Image (cartoon, rainbow, N blue to C red):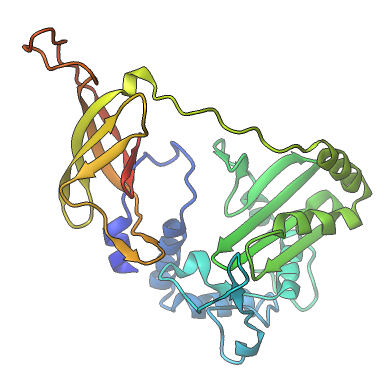
Length: 318
């Protein structure tokens, strides 16, 4: 993880400027926890969170004695996915049962079960649900929780999780004292399942969903892409990665999508995908398409604009 942070832990916006959900961000948090506590992240979570809350089937990674409870993961074609793990443990490696997650949700509803030891004061639990002023996934984001102030007439607190062969949701309705958990070892249906479970307990939600789903239509096909005039032309600059700084040229015209080239193009890391990471880039306009640099016959004055942004895979975004 130290190497991952050194390579990819790059700030591309000022803190508080925008919302960008980051697995790496949670990975950095698990590193901070380990260094401050003197324990491994897995041991800290077990001692300070899982055991006090009575989460007996929850662990970072597949814990000893829990191997038989780990579900096989499947892809969209129902093919088994081989076991995989991550270096960002704080983002993606907690295994749990639906029962344990309901207990965790009850703790956040401030239902103090007799066999649980409070690991946070009620005031801190409330503070975690206070959203920032930045939009996140069409809603708001607090401290580790998505906040929906008015979802089908209810205030809903939730967090989802998704990786190849697994999608999950833990959501709760504070005014109704209701927690809902869905764990799937596939990639489809989990959102609807969660809504349907909540609707069984909340008739008003059931009525709202019925009306919404009756009105639901297939989304219209997107209009053909047209490059904005101020982006036409060639842009030159650099892309800085953990290894080196590379020259970069991005060309955009009216009839095709933009193309991006560099002296060292990205390489596939496996048969299933490309190496993809967020890296800083600096791009400036070289000349408009169909125009020639200043000094050429009929040429326009050279226009230069500095653009800061990020590059991912073989494309640039600013």
